Image (cartoon, rainbow, N blue to C red; front, top):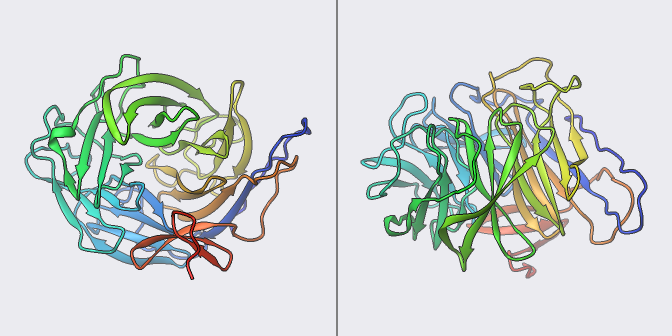
Length: 379
């Protein structure tokens, strides 16, 4: 079992709340098949499983508690993400390290959440999309298979992100566009993501910009109304945390508070490419670290290819956190804030809630009970 630490919060006034981090499973003690840093650089967790885009095998590989479970043939690529409905979007296209996006051929795969056939997606007709390298994807919005959705890409050398719109399982060129950001963004490196992250108390949709070696996040307030994304980004705020140099991490909302999960620095405070991560509570003052998973390696295993921590909402008080240390292991955690306020941070001995997919539908499991996404019990 992977060792992880939780920091006990100092005693505070009534109203302080407890956070619980629980490791559900980890592949660290078992062979994990063909995961290695050169060709399997990014992954994403959905429904208790972890999906890795492996360019060497030209497949999306699916991992669980016992390691590699199956491979879904998709084609060459590194980038991969999920949308809100659990559909997987992965990179396809021309083989080669960091191949540029192109508007004249198939560039994406969609692996539907219902298990139906993989869809090959061309980016033909996307005006303003640069022919530039993109290695990684951030979280996508909506349901790209059965409704509408967006994937925002940040490309090497570009100064503005590009929003790729989807409608009913294909790209929607009429509603895809370069986004307009008046504030200065961290430079788009080849290893960056711009993913939809949370909705604030005023109903505004936010996105997190992560740049490898960036040392911080940027929190973008999007111009979005009734699921329709506008071109103009309303606001950009720097979020400074004690983040290591590896690629990975994002901002998320749980209960009424904001948190960030990210690769941690080592004990010297230096940038590193080890496998630990931290969760910090964000507020008006300095971020407060509330949970830490310590590193288990003493040396870099993947030349900075990635130490990914991705978040999957379960309910208002619970998220799944998936941890992928490239060329090392995959693990799943739950992170929970209880409804009632207490003063301690506790380690759970059992899983409180998690998402899974059964018969093509997203199901929330709490103990022996199962619920649909509307909160209705499934018998």
